[in-house]
Picture 1 (spheres, rainbow, N blue to C red):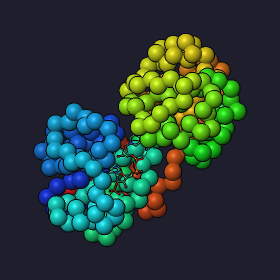
Picture 2: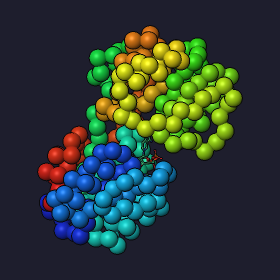
Picture 3: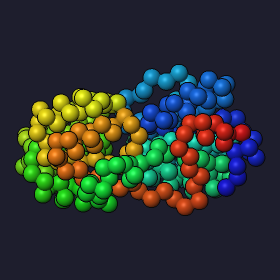
Length: 251
Ligand code: NAP
């Protein structure tokens, strides 16, 4: 794959849906670098100053067509660490068209001081199965898109499902929906754990600091943590972890 400096084009395509995506878009805007922020269009549009497009591209070929049509000079994939399909599509489309691609991924929590105490699982199905053995109530923090994956296994448990925006489906009667958007503080999380007396927390290895406080609150409460591993990134993908590194990499 070519480096960003070797390619001429009109605009940087930012694949977002995360705080990092918005921050990179803003950093480029501040430097006068033309950039388009792309969002999947699943949630309400965030407040951003620069241009935004919304909705899928239509798979690898759709994205490749977009890169050609808009004369995209480089792609920054700042999607969530669990948005594996978009990342895979970006790798294939950028390779096809010869557009440089960098992945901005915040470090995960695998080196967190508490990581060895957690029950690491490979995906949502295993997480639901392990969580079903943890008693109740449970705090479920897997995001709007995957909350409903837990309904079958945990239908008869008391579950607090915390999401930024409500899932599109009916939740069991013993479930409570808690709509809240991070960053969350340790004191707030401690209070939430004490109020409900959670026996378990289900979380994704999202990394970053916005949602990290729940991990310490769980430890303090003695609640088990079911932690879903990140999907493996495609091979040969250039990965950086800071906005400064993205900006340095750009043409
Ligand atoms: P995904 O499984 O990797 O993507 C599914 C499809 O959604 C993609 O194939 C693509 O459709 C479209 N898409 C995803 N991100 C897009 C973007 N930035 N711009 C345009 N189209 C996009 O992703 P997901 O897990 O459903 O997540 C959807 C979005 O929510 C992502 O942008 C991600 O950054 C954000 N998000 C995800 C999570 C999570 O835990 N998964 C958490 C927070 C935020 P086409 O194939 O039609 O192009």
